[in-house]
Image 1 (tube, helix red, strand yellow):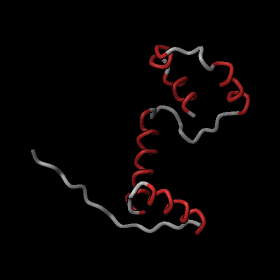
Image 2 (cartoon, one colour):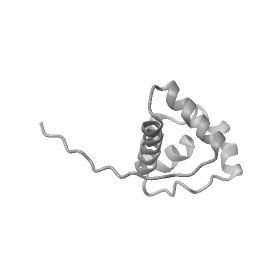
Image 3 (cartoon, one colour):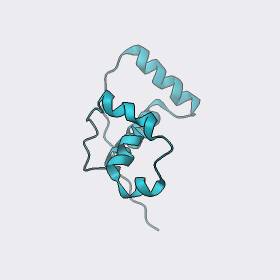
Image 4 (tube, one colour):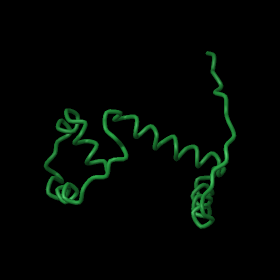
Length: 93
């Protein structure tokens, strides 16, 4: 079995120091390097976004729509979610 190694590119990002401290804390809790943790978090988010490419992941859900989330809770079946990507997406937010 042959494995392919992806080329890696070094980059620099800027963030405020307090936020960086939080990220370091979570990386240490998971016994990961800061770099590995940041890459893992970003990879997970990108994979989540790519699950539903036809929906704009940056679209904010209005408070009116969010108010329905409590009303719908427990009334939606797995079949409903399997058949309606938009509904699954909204409920995951």
